[in-house]
Amino acid sequence: MASSFHCLIFDLDDTLYPFNTGIATACKKNIEDFLIEKCGFPKTQAPILRTELFKTYGSTLAGLRALGYDIKADDYHGFVHGRLPYDRIKQDFQLRRLLLSIPQRKIIFTNSDMIHATKALSRLGLEGCFEKIICFETMNPNLPKATRPNEFPILLKPSMDAMRIALDVADVDPRHTLFLDDNIRNIAAGKSLGLRTVLVGKTVKSKEADYVVESVHNLVQVIPEIWMNTADSDGDDEMMNRSRNEVDSIHMTAAAAVGA
Image (cartoon, rainbow, N blue to C red):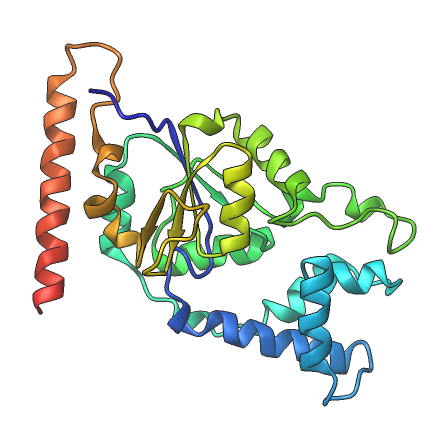
């Protein structure tokens, strides 16, 4: 039997590495520092403003530009991501092995900029594991051409427009695509477009999630059909057997890690 999945689309931050790495917390602190140092907001207001802009506009940058602040995306990302403690992201050889055992197309879909995405993937040791990276620049190609801050609204997950751009760039059939993300709103948006969805980093499944995994390392146990024979011909037994052996080996490695 062939796998029903032809492509896997992965979020990056807090999906390919855990939330407790501390990158998300550091990012929030950097955003608040940006509001204080670059926009002149009082220190006491920065956390509240960051939260409100995120809720209303999808990101602090999107909110600031919508309100008329002429902030360049590269300057914002350079400040917010440039100060991140990337040394907290460790190489994950087990995840690399898992990803390379997956025969389908694999794509990154992140709200972050390309510089951050490539740096995080490099820290994880996952160079060469993904066909392409769909990121901030992919969803907002016209932003550098803007003559005023609110000329082009910033698009990010879970915006349906952003999701459609990503699916178009990925050139996938949603019905045969597995979408993995740690954010429930992103999962809901993906589900509404027909994607098969995996909520990552949680133990309880949301109503829009087809699957839930506490870690991407658990994909083998939760969705083994990813590794079903994807060959069109019946003569690819060697490939199928190799995939089975790789999955069995990953199972054994994961079990050993749990027992350590």
